Length: 434
Image (tube, rainbow, N blue to C red; front, side):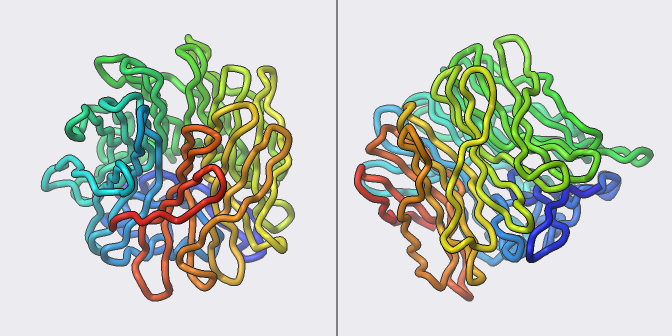
C-alpha cells in the first residue's frame, strides 16, 4: 500500500520519498508496495540515496534529476565554541553520489574530506549532523554497495578527521537500512533515527522505524514502535537530557495515508505518544523535524494536506501533550508549503525552515517563534524569483545567531548548495562551496 496525499497537482504522492530513506533495493525487497520502491527517475545506483525532503509534487522528479555535479545540503549544526557543520550529497554522475561535508570556520565555508567508503560504494549521502563539542561530532545517512545493499552510514569527527564507525543494519542484505537524523547529548550519549526494510520473497514487507544509540563505545539498535500495518519512518530526533528525547516521522494508516508519528524516550524505553493530525485520517500528515528546549518544551514541524493543498504544520509539547500551533504558509496561498527543520534555543526564540511552491518553483521559507506566535520572515532566494531555492535544515546558537542550509537551482543548471545566516537582524545568503 502506498502512503498517499491528495493535492491539487497530483492525486497520489508518496510522502516518504526524499526524506532520508534509501530506495535502492534488490528485487526481492520490492515485496513492499511503498512508493519508495519506485521514485520518479530512480535507478538502483545513483538514486539509491534520496537527497532532500519533498518539495511540491511537481518537484519530486526534479529532485531526482541526477544532474552531474549537483550538490545538496540536508543537515546543519552549530559547533560549541564557534563554527558550524553542514552535510549533504554530491551527485558526481548518473552512476553514483558521495556524501558531502562542509565546515564554517571564521568567515567562510570549506569542504572537509569525507571517509573513503571503498570501491564497492556506488552511492552515499549524509542527511543529519550533530556536534557535541569541537572535537566530537556525528553525521548520519546511508550508503549503497554495488547498487544492491543499502546500509546505515555513521561518521564521527574526532577533532582532526571524519571516520566511519560501525552501525547496526537490521535490514540485512539485500535489505535497506537508512538513518535520517542524529542528536548528541554528550560524548557518551547520542541518538540516530531512520527506517529499515528486510528482504522477504514470500510475504510483503514494510519499512519499520529504526533508532540507534551511542553509549560511548558502540552504536546499538534500540527497540522502537512501528505503528499501523504498513510503512513507518522516523525522520528527526532531538534530545534534552539522558532521560528525555523525541523522534518524529510518519506511519501509514489503514486507509493508506500518512499520519504523524511522535515517539518519546523516558530513560528506559521508546513509546509512541498521541500527536495531532489536522489533515484527518483521509489526508496525509507528516513531521520532518523536532527540537527540544527542555523535557517540557519542544517543537515539531512538517506538513499536512488541507483539502487539496499542502500546508505547514507545527506542533508543540508543553510537558503534558502535543498540540498544533498556528503557522503561516507561503504568500497568496501557494500550491504547497512545507517545513522540514526546526531549531529552538529558548521558550521565546525558535526557527523553522522549508519551502513554498508557487509559479512552478520552490522558494525558501523561514518562520520565527517569538514566544507567542510563529511569523514568516523575509528569506533570501539567491537564485532569484525565477529559480528554485529550498531550505532543508536550520540550527541556532542563540536568538541572534542561526544558520540554514539547502540548495538552489537555476533553470538548466545543476543544483548548488545554499547556506543562509541570521545576524540578529536579517537573513543573508552566505557563499558555500560545491
